[in-house]
Image (cartoon, rainbow, N blue to C red; front, side):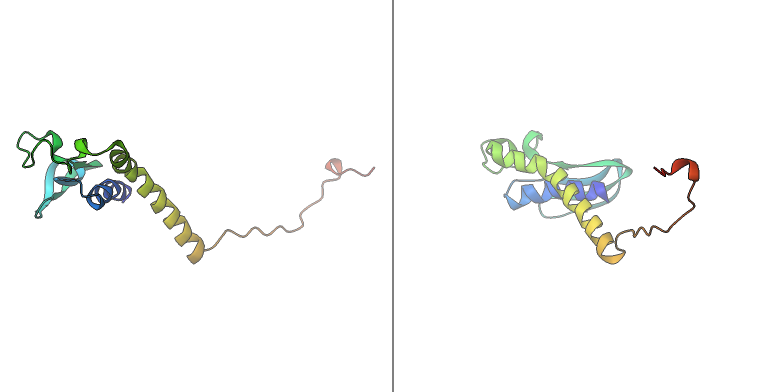
Length: 126
């Protein structure tokens, strides 16, 4: 789940800014499931140890001209930084969401201190 959320962060940041994305995958290796949308190929790969969001910038068969302003490499540094950092920001939001959900449904651990045995050698009587 954390890999999916992380990659969704990158993907969403790019798409919300109008940056071209051509692949979204969870896992590596051969594809188990693949869906080809109008612009993006979504896939679930065999080895679930990561994932990736691919941009058409470095493809030799890129359907966009090299000076297209919606390619990641042609965007300002701020836009690229948003896309790069969106994965970890999505992870942080996801983590806080899980924590919030746990606290609101299960609650905090309640510690109840009760009197125990008094050991005379350890108590001060002065």
